[in-house]
Image (tube, rainbow, N blue to C red; front, side, top):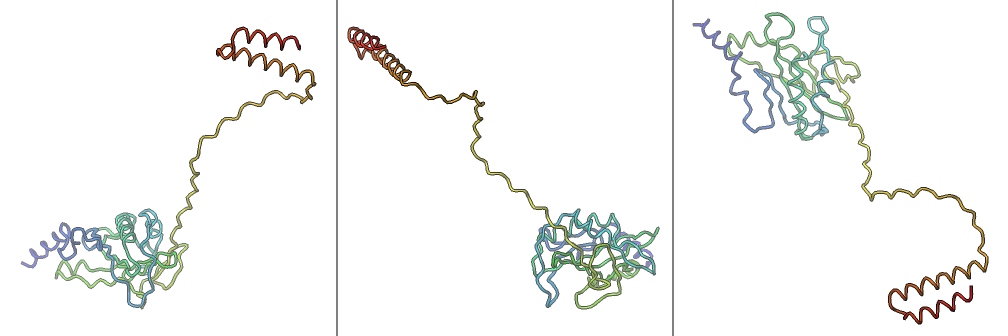
Length: 262
């Protein structure tokens, strides 16, 4: 009977998440990533300064920040997260940061098999928030072994996410990070590139006419100016005749008078 119960519990772990861990449809305070893996928005710890939330930070940026994190396990240094583990976590954290309020932290539990063949899944618990242009991560458990007890007795641990108030036994390190405590790192958030100013649309500029030949300015002779004036008078007379504003007799008489002065 005990063997059958253990098999039944194992089937639950492999195929079905407990109902207590399922987020209510439409509830954006929790992102379920699998059995015993989730991200939550929770009230910030008492006395904490307001966080720089909400924040738009892409999943790729979060993955790049968290992937270099390392910890010590049984005296050996290894990656805090696996690459496959971070794919789902980074997307959930990106969405959660975009919705989180200044009075909220993010907490996570991530349970995966971590490198050893036929090993049980081990849990990782952490608290995250953004302050001072840095993504703060406090890890309480880097390798929490709880699966055997769950399979035998269906008892889950009380997950603890890390706290500003007291350190856990986890030791973290990452290049470029600021170590607040052994279990607490501050990771610099990449700043968005400034967008170039867009030119204001205006009227199309008119094409410039090609420059003409340079002509030296020569003062006009008085006789030339007088002849030009007479030519204008003749053109005006012709136009008036064509428009029937002068009779033929009037036109010829005035024309003859101008021509005699040339």
